[in-house]
Amino acid sequence: MSDTPLLTLRNLRVVYPGDEGDLVAVRNVSFDLGRERLGIVGESGSGKSTTGRAIMGLVAAPGIVTADEMRLAGKDLTSLDERGFRRLRGKKVAMILQDPKYSLDPVMSVGQQIAETHRCHFRSSMNAARAAALDMLAAVHIRDPERVYALYPHQVSGGMGQRVMIAMMLIAGPDLLIADEPTSALDVTVQHQVLAIMDDLVRSRGMGLILISHNLHLVSSFCDRVLVMYGGRVVETCAAGELSKARHPYTRGLLASLPELGRRRAELPQLRRDPAWAEG
Amino acid sequence: MIVLEHVTVSYGTGIGRIFAASDVSFRVEEGAAFGLVGESGSGKSTVLRAIAGLIPHAEGRVMLAGREMPMRRSTSERKMVQMVFQDPYGSLHPNQTVDQTLSMPIAIHKLGDSDRRISSVLREVGLGREHRYRYPHQLSGGQRQRVAIARALVLEPRILLLDEPTSALDVSVQAEILNLLARLRQIHGLTLLMVSHDLAVIAHLCERIGVMSNGSLIELTSAEALSSGRVTHSYTRQLLRSNRGFDRSGAEIVDAAS
Image (cartoon, rainbow over all chains, first blue to last red; front, side, top):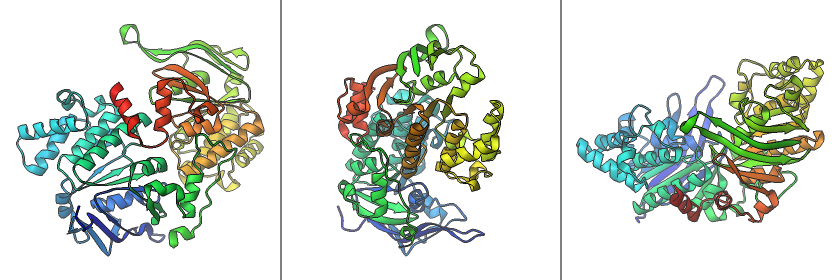
């Protein structure tokens, strides 16, 4: 492990200009990421996905991304244009989205999609790409890679689809994987299987992982460190195991409003939002 | 209040016949809250729809308030059972204001006095007068779910069927809706039947819980038993573990079974 962080963000801002004033989706987010598992939690509209997209260079116009510093594996991202980002995506940073049903191409077999990624990044031959894709399918614990290779996205289950996505994202060997709600569309028992596979691969390859999720329990039990976002700001950073000792009123409010097994309450405390949290 | 006897729902014939629900029986007393948990495809929503009368070819007996429901239900039988769906974005008509959405059931059931009914039901679900003439896209997710609950309540039902009422909402909004449902149940003496994949949510609102898997009801238990981990079926234990956060042992069991 080297001392220089894999990813450095200083004052990342994402602004959508509008007729009635600008909408600031991400306000001055700063963090360093090593080869660790970082969780970003927050409710819808907190800017957690937008942060992930900004790192990928995927914030579409009219959105404007600015940062004092944005570095990935030594490369400056602030000056990068679309072509530069295209070269970066896949090899340096890859992203897994929520629902494999929408993020896989429906008219191409899943194996071909994985092989295409390999061909694109390594200019490999058909046969080499196919062999690499089959290896990758085996690496995500798919029993019969030959059979699954030829299946179309509608023929695979949600959990298998998400494993295919992981295979596709990891085949080019990125340094950083951003997983945006990777298991929200899956059943709870399958969720853990997918997370365990992702965890094994990320560890064995020494990658960094950013897990974006609204599920506090999941993030605190899976990650090393957690950022809590509210209104585009990081309101709190804490070690994942100590999320229950969080101090910020927003984090505490979120934790309190979750129903808990074994602790039945007549009424759940409701979160009172303080506009100052987004300003601070 | 709700009695199900050997309810079976199947699609297709011969060897291609698929059982969405097979031989499901349980009963829910008046004023009680019963929860159904299970994964997608376990048949929990199918059971709910069969109770609501949305699956005419369901076999077995459905008795509501002591009466056996016929294949084709009368207006008053329909009025008695109302349903709230998972996705408030999909279940409200995008081109109708809240007022129109709420006045339609009143007109269909010829209840009359529409203006008073709408304003009182909106107050009950915690929406103000300013929300009455808005379109769904002008409301937040939580407000939309409140409208969906108001739409069910305006007919003064005795049974409320809830199909994943909070899974599309943020946790803080989920707490608000769960509190609202608990309060409404107390005020109106409603019988609730809720479906969810979240054990903590189910155990919060319901006293008795049924666990479904592959179309069958595999275990009948209570919120207390779940909380203290006293469950008999291995599948329920696995669900319980999965709900407590990420843990490798849970993942490995699935791996062995798949």
